[in-house]
Length: 105
Image 1 (cartoon, helix red, strand yellow):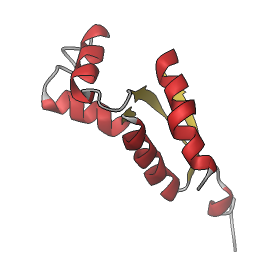
Image 2 (image 1 turned 45 degrees about the horizontal axis):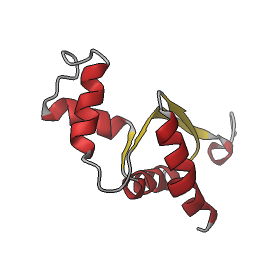
Image 3 (image 1 turned 180 degrees about the vertical axis):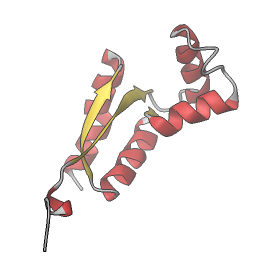
């Protein structure tokens, strides 16, 4: 007897922050500066653990790094992305440098 929905019909989504920087940016220092500005220096502190945790849980980096991370999520079956706490600069760079790469794959 089959109960419930077919697993392959379930739409999988990811929710997190987009922190996208132009090529050549010092991603680590920008992320640490951002975390400190959010007043999370105690919970995130600027130690390796805070930075690593933030990068692991969000889409962070240059256009190539963000593209690669999204491709990994797609391989896991995630088809919807809800990006939170992103800047206008990140959104514009995402549309210009990352999204268009998926239109050609």
